[in-house]
Length: 398
Image (tube, rainbow, N blue to C red; front, side, top):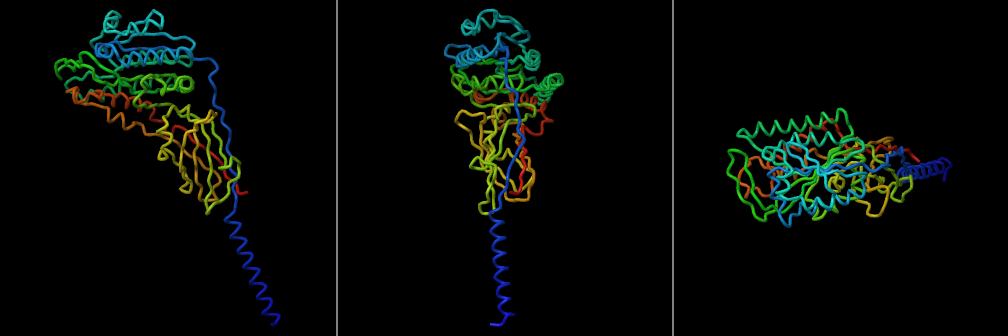
């Protein structure tokens, strides 16, 4: 074999080895992931609690014997009372009427007779005015709860009225947030036995008797997301007697605690089939969002198309974090990324629960006249909040 041919074979072998080495290195290239720690403020002093129960005539039917509303509200407030500084009780319609007895007597006084005796204008209560009064009681140190059937009293021109009421609620929320930007609102849809008269709006029908049927009502929780989150950690909504049907929350943007790692909990990501898998452990509790919303991967969006949220699941064990987020990275050249979390402004259950007719209660037993307009008004008050929270992290070739 000539020297020339020999050297060509040596060169070819060297090139093949170099190419194989490059291919191997590119397939096994590692990334180091990092993020800036976020410290979320903890509640040091438990907040005070104000509880407002609407005592308008439309609420009388919920005060029957065997009413789930009475048991649910009483047990919920009793549990919250153990984790608050002070608890004050009020009836509310056109007026705010303080309840001056102790909490243990409260359940006995949830009756149509006590509602009438409490006073105020029980015939024509304005939900916008009631919410405005409730909001005035909210502060950095006070959480307020508002219990109501949230039924709008429709005039003849209902569509204009719905828009007006939506604007009324928007104004209430926006005016409060001007001076109190940390305002957060959580709304629970509940259900209870109703046994009494159902009053149609004027021109929509005569009062009808409803016997032993289930009707929706709502618990509004208003305060800072920090205080509401604190109370949720002590008394989760899932522990309310008889449970709740649905929920929706509105908060300002909040930076939540999180950390990033590999599946093995280290900071180095190894490529598998050209992809990298990363875990984010995050505490979603300050967002006040439901597990259904948090676990829905369509609520997450990265700036790069090469980064995808594949799975979100709750951390069942006691932890400073509430959820795992599994992320797949397809491009090793990405240096920095920001995954945003944003839920829809209006949940589907709100649309499904809404009634626009104000007529024929027997066909709309599970619906509430105008609830969509009320919650849309709240949502409009948070329109500038383009995301709920985000997870910013860096990637570096290792």
